[in-house]
Length: 298
Image (cartoon, rainbow, N blue to C red; front, side, top):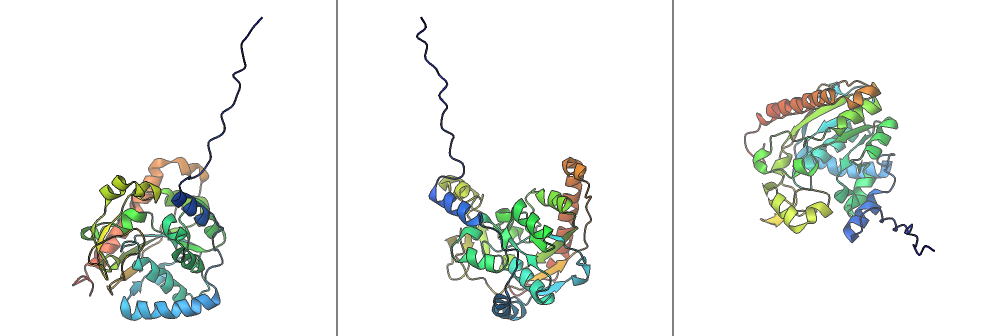
């Protein structure tokens, strides 16, 4: 008579998703439905008045290339600078709101940590900012809205000040496939000046890895900055007031992409479009940077 016992017991499934408190908070906050309605009329009125002053007098924004914006919805691709407060990105989105008088919605996108931050993340949502995810961007484009993405993410925004005129897309090519899936053109955007609103002395890659916070906060950098009011600070969430640097931005010629689903797995084609976008942005930045005489003052 056999005395063998059954070994069919199944192990309980491992819990899905982040288990640490920070990870849970981020996942919960960014899991909400994105605000695809854009800015409300009341929000746009008051927020727009503030940004009109900032764009006209504080950052002295120069923005060109409006005639290059396609009539149909587009995926705008650019770089953004200035630590965790990317004034070149915000000034672009708010200039768009003013130019189109709210009749054409442009959704900005943001890092998970910023979207999840209490207060700041709520402001982002009210401003029509969506998570930089396939779901968020795809939904906005499907709704007939325009979206601007900064593929370089924290590698771009928190790059060293000495690299302020370099186009950093971080090798992240998902935006090419997103444009192909959504059937929209790509509009490269060049900008300079945002990185003069704060001085990133170090990108803090070692610090992010050593503390483990880089992984928990879904980023590779913990920049060390010099700015106002702190002459030296480690910045994860905003730790500075942007300096009144002059910002110059230009919309560049649209780049049409193939909408054939079978091309999504064509790595050579994706690389080609990525390189074309990166080269266009770098060329535009070189032209804009040549106009700068002094940091901050432009």
